[in-house]
Image 1 (tube, rainbow, N blue to C red):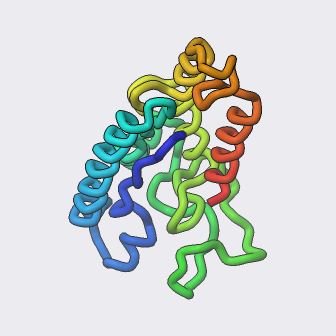
Image 2 (tube, rainbow, N blue to C red; image 1 turned 180 degrees about the vertical axis):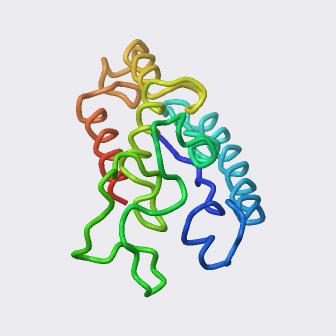
Length: 180
């Protein structure tokens, strides 16, 4: 199972607009998110020690997204403040239907005011699957390899066994995540 931290919501365009902030991020909002993420990490650790036959990976996405916001060019992103699509005046922060989004949608951090783009989700997914430092206790690929090499009491059919279905479910999660 992969659990993702909440990103730095205080830097999201919808929060900045609603609070009417002149700064790049509203740090008191980010401080609340950090408190939640710290408790989430502790709970994941507790569950991991309780559920012995389950691997729970915590993807520490807060710092990564924060870095994407402040050092966007490092990630190949050209726009880290404005959303790619035209956002309605209804306060939802969502794209207006039938309006053309930005031309360089693969180089923007935010799709609309409330969601990061497919490009940003791809960066997170690649780092969660193969990178180091984002996912703990291991990246997804290493966790799958470890689970494959761990014999189970049911000859590869127990909770630690990895099937193609499990891998497809993880991949499907990332596809769904990219559209949220």
